[in-house]
Image 1 (cartoon, rainbow, N blue to C red):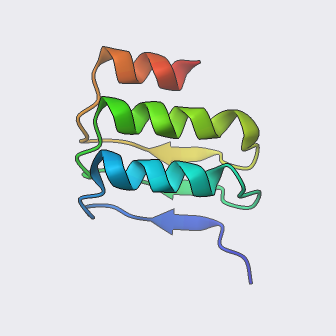
Image 2: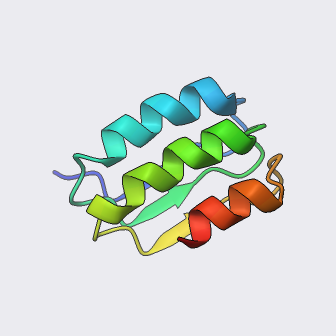
Length: 79
């Protein structure tokens, strides 16, 4: 079986965990839904995640609610 949905809501991932997750996402071609709300992810974590998305064409839903995102992190994700 293949993992297509990953729910990591409220796991206190923070920027360090987001960095590891970003590395994994670069090589994942099946994940369609990623739920990361309430994880204390801030600017550096968002930059790391954003760097993984250009090579990931399967992700169609990303939930980043209630993290520590600010304008700089949002601008990274918008690219």
